[in-house]
Image (cartoon, rainbow, N blue to C red):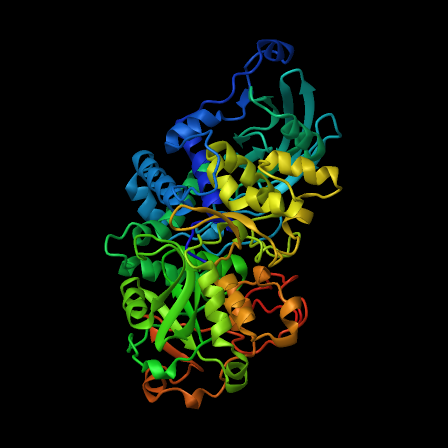
Length: 606
């Protein structure tokens, strides 16, 4: 499920957009350019004293990141790369933080964990990573009843929203502070805009929200349906900036490495992250390269991969105990052993999209890229089902097709709230594509809007218009994103030669599953299995692999006697819990929760 920097949580995923949004919010500290309030509204509420103006102006955010705000993604366009946007955004954000926050303070924070953070819901994070994501508190409807909640600082917090001719006025009533110096730090959002607000004192506080001049009817319609979403950060704005900084440093050194390798300190930080967040203890290995003869690799064999680069560990955390970030499959053609995959060209990989690389070349590239690689051979029964010719034909039909950005989220999100790691939620996810679209419409189209249009049978709708169309059919956001990702879905795609085509959208694990499906491995269940619904965990937990650990080559046993498979590369030991344990069922993969830590176990036939 890899080779892209996404958000949200995210995700998230959410991944690219989630961090980009936090970056835009952090940028607001140095670029406080809210929409100016209507003078008549200010007059009605007694002037600017004690009043905040909102939301932040998207033009200033786009200026900070240096992106084109009106460019939509077009079929045949390979220039829009989420990874490039992600790296650029993180680099600018880290530069900004280092310019406004003393490095001594950043260093001093390293020894502190999450014990200074408070969650209204009781959720916890074990460290600073992804602590910048706010938790959902409530939604306040325009003209509706006041909503109230208890916050860590102000035990009594109320919010009401009144309409104006040019927007709305949000009135906060705060009481019962828990200490003299405490504060509560919030993010307030709609599909039209976002705002940050820190409350230090009790009493009445007003936020004057002025619609952007280009607000669309569909955006107003969404605000009418869903109101203003209120999120609270787990710490104050300075600790939140630190959390952004520490999270960014999980990614940037590896993503900007000139030789494509992962720096040692970055790998150590990511291994520690996996230990704390995913309960994966990646111990160091004494033997880091294990060579096996190509004859010991057969068509259909699986390679599970993790790169300690921020992206793979984030996927492992977000999806729930998934201990790989990339997946590939072996195939022989004309006597040559290939490793086939769906991936993205970057600083550590030379080729884009769906590809097959001779094994000898691939393993060298994998070693240079700091891959941890586990070889999972199919068992004899599974190998007997493989039609090598059909499998190769499937590859040739899709060779050179761009990476599956269109379906990167949908194998992960199966349930309304059951797939999000704390503090991510569907409420935050719903705003991410809309806000990302205000920063870079092309990125929002690539990661979200194409999928929304495929699900709705529409064309070229942006996020707010897609939400409005869904609502007209009685569908809310969670209905839309939990729809089964059918293998019959066709996306406006692009080949490596820039040619616009209509075809499948396949991330790495979806492509591996699709190759197996095309080969006949799934037998009579093939028509009832949607590979678009898989995650990395789904494919390596299937009971199709060789289970006799003693049948491994002797050099594999010597290097890792406690593993049931052969780890070919990696400084750290790659463990895959639930490997080879789950039977394939009709509609497998369609409704799987994230699972609860530390084991992240899932229902038998999810």
